[in-house]
Length: 118
Image 1 (cartoon, one colour):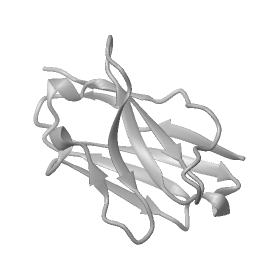
Image 2: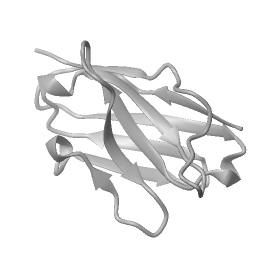
Image 3: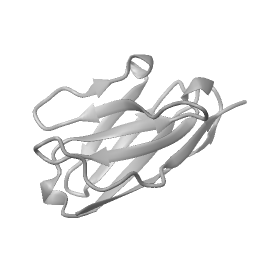
């Protein structure tokens, strides 16, 4: 199994930047794709960014040009660099890992809260 722990969230002003992390442990050799998701109050969880070996990253339209997903395979950490943050980016951010069959590992973690406010 794979365990995922998100961290690095916080309060940031509009226009600011924040980098959040997701540390993977357990059967990390089985991980293929990884992704970031977010859920704002009263809204459904949505995909933010996905990364898989040999493919260009996918970004949700509203974050294109502002967010960058990266992965340190040696440390088994997934990052999301968020720039030019907007109030509508406020949400709990979750990460997810998938095996080579695109099946997700385990259940959702606790996530990390990102709040964009003046």
